[in-house]
Image (cartoon, rainbow, N blue to C red; front, side, top):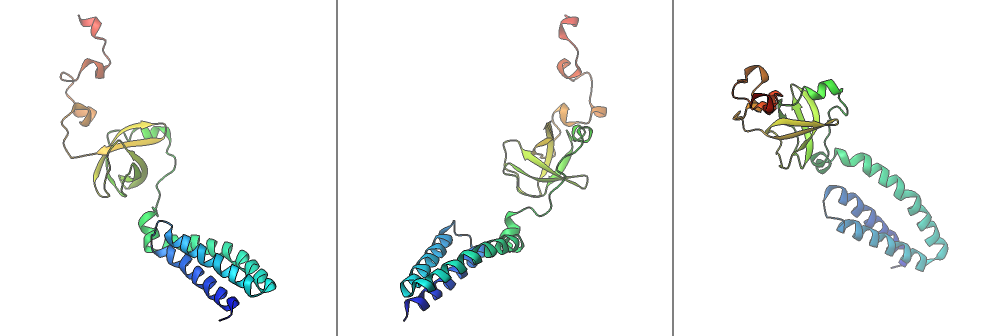
Length: 189
């Protein structure tokens, strides 16, 4: 078989392996195989004829960027792409007054949080960060703090054992520590 034809077959095989990599996660192994097939195909094209090899190399140089752009556009629509990417992001930035009112709110994780992910509170999807715990999608979460415009959440088991978990209107002022009430202890000693 002529090395030129074999080179073209290897280049076609390399392009097919690039497309397969889109659907099969291989940690880059298929990418290395595809690159090797393309390189060997170009070398064999040059062995066949220098002019033929030059045309093959030029064609491949023009084709690969278009293939890359097409695959980047197509990948989020594949099952693997949908599993990895979050397709519906919440609001990027909330006004400061809205963010402060979310502390203490209970919501539901809409994506796996390692450490960040998507949560939903009162029908509104928001980006949040888990405070030290992995949280599975569907678990209840509680907003524990706001730093800047970032919401920090922790898993919520439904137990309101501490006073800070109870809404302010329902808290017992006599059992609340003085520090939380903003009263200086030195005044009453």
